[in-house]
Image (cartoon, rainbow, N blue to C red; front, side, top):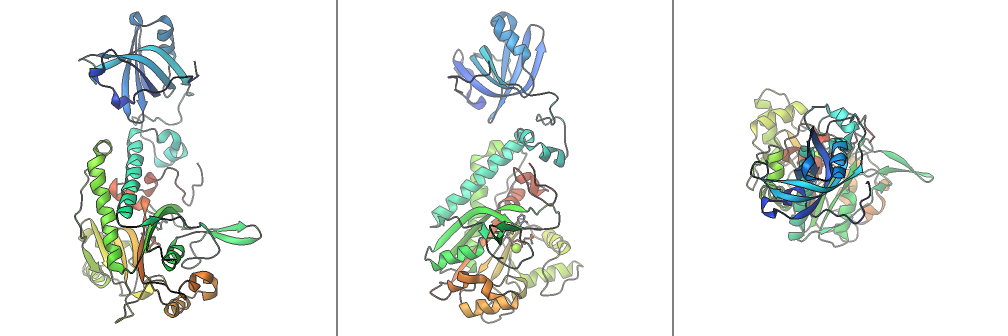
Length: 438
Ligand code: ATP
Ligand code: MG
């Protein structure tokens, strides 16, 4: 019987208790494992919330139920109507004895990947069969945490007067220069996939929205294959008017801190499943200037000139000397995009910051340049053509307030929360240099 009919799940696995002794329930899910012992069949049914044991003793069920139970295979989708029977000897203090079993769909054998976590598989095999891989309880827990993370981030934004916006992802020109863009054909023209909502967020400031945030995809044609780069990522972005970089940093550290607090309070089950000992770091996070960071790097024997960006080796050394989250502030103007506001007294440095976790960059932000002339100068200095920036530039001519903001990679953030070495673990279907499917 593969028909759902009028059956509906009455309980998830974690909602059944020994106190429900005698009640009739319907559970639905996948066959996590099955043991057939002559006159007794044990089925472990797995659903989103966990597993539950179904016991099928030949002499206590109808012949049809027993025959169906015997024909169940691993990962079949099953629905079971049964009675809860309190039993001190059962692992959960109860078992379920079926009245009717429906096999809603059979799974072919052998399975291309074992979802039970018993057999380890390398990440490529797992990603090739991601739909099966995602059935693993640890991986389900990770994506539950990701969902809760995004919810917490939204809550903090709403509580601080931000509104959520959606900006276009099909764009006519580059945000920061042409190197990292994916070109696409747009009817009879060339267009690109958006690498950042930066320019649109800023136009929202000219529009008078005051505080906006966006959670959306960014596309970067990064050629290199690393454990911390994707070609499609989700960026958590915000922009705020009448604010400077320090205000933006305060919002950022609050967003991060609140996610840790919320996950700690609401998601102990998932954290336990993943063996994560969440360390809630108090705010304010430490701040080091770029110059201080360069001194640290040099003092540890890695040569680095003032004005360079941190190499991977430099980031590693820096990460070894810093605990948890910290900001790097006061960057050389040369190292940052044209829309960053230089320091008025010393234009060699600018009002940019990065949020780091040990050796990993989580977020970049800054107070932005809100003056038309300075902006055009900056665009030219970067070797770009101001004419390519169209109405973005115009937005600065007719009343642009001072503003600041940042962008944080959702997957980078998840790497930190869930202690993953490879960013691909934090995406359902990662896109990288080799991978475009599934
Ligand atoms: P990195 O130097 O680590 O490559 P970036 O400085 O080029 O990053 P930004 O342009 O500052 O990145 O983007 C802001 C944030 O977006 C980064 O701090 C990171 O969290 C995230 N991000 C950027 N590029 C990627 C990517 N290719 N894959 C995953 N996340 C990314
Ligand atoms: Mg950056």
